[in-house]
Length: 150
Image 1 (cartoon, rainbow, N blue to C red):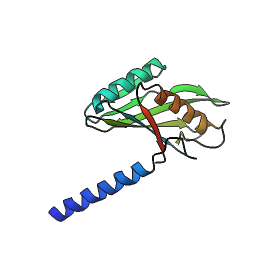
Image 2: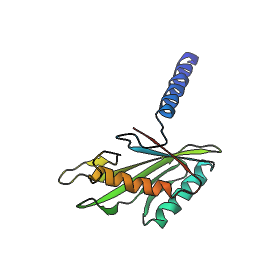
Image 3: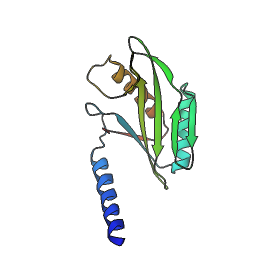
Image 4: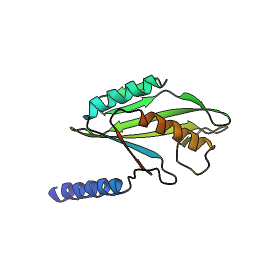
């Protein structure tokens, strides 16, 4: 049993180390995750993020303080054609937090969603959605933005 727990712990540490090495100060091509580094604790950070998003016109669909997660209702934006963006966020527990945020938009004519990402096509729906996500993240007071690819 101890061997299994130790193996899981080492796997978790490896995954955290890998995720941290993928974080960058500027969005790399195809970045689809924005991380806000903040001195706020997990629950306070989530509440503060919900206020920031509400001030930007988003409505909060769910805010779970136990799981430290947040999901917005879809908010309309335009990328040549009307679309909507849903933001999903979760944060780490502890005295300082990393808030991970991602965004999804519906793909026209399909029963699936696309993921907001920093694509090179500046006017494409995924890039415009990412720009909206970045705008929301940048409004978090005192946060440092980092970028990664899920």
